[in-house]
Amino acid sequence: MKSIADGVWPTMITPFQEDGSIDYQTLEKLVDWYVERGVAGLFAVCQSSEMFFLSLKERLALSRACVKAARGRVPVIASGHVAETLEDQVEEARLMADTGVQAVVLLVNRFARYNEGDDVFRRSLDRFLSLMPADILLGFYECPAPYKRLLSPALMKFCVESGRFGFLKDTCCRTDDIAAKLAIAKGSNFKLFNANAATLLDSLKAGAAGYSGVMTNFHPDLYSWLCANWAADPERARELQDFLGLASVIESQYYPVNAMYALSLEGVPCGLVSRRADPSRFSPSMKLEVEQLMRISRSYSARFRQGAAGGMK
Figure: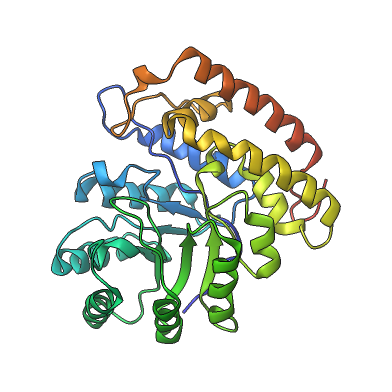
């Protein structure tokens, strides 16, 4: 199976029109914006994409549109794994695989309820894998909704040894736990992408393949630089990491509306319509905070520019 590329995989925002329908024209411009900032690929139909608020038809259409807009410049992976029953999950994943994505990303919390153990998870996953074509590359996402479940070391070992998985979006936010997972995956095709900005540099040093988090909707070029240059330029990497870790507190402000506003400041004609959050609650002071962050981000972008081969301009 083809390996997932190292680097930055944005968790894509879904732009909506005023009537709440998906804005596919803006989606094309958004894909261009990501690609121009040196990302390795695109993570479509994820929680940032508001997948829990999209119908199956919309999730599939959104994935196809992202693949089309990427035009082969970067690969696309997608989730959309929201169904409750195992049978529906299998159907969902098969249909998503047919949209042209490189990998289908599964939610860790879909295979067992919050009060059920790894034994239930393992039985459900075994059954799921037996019903999925072996040539479909899979990934896992430790999604915090509807509840947060992390891959245990035993489950990580099983997934690695199965040979079916190539991607993990890790959300544990703990360097020691990330290092333990990386030790299990060492020498395999299974790559870990950290979703937590504060621990990113340390995770890269431990062997993480890159970053896949919500801050890619504010300044993905800075993450691209860090992932490509942290080993060759450790002093500047630490300086940039300090900024990225601090800047990431904006995640808790009013996401994804604040990211939509940041994108509009970047020239992406993205409105503030969301199915998940009421844009009227995005206050003037919140807007000012995003504006101030983006001005500082641009100053860092001017200093840390991603070159065509991962170097610096």
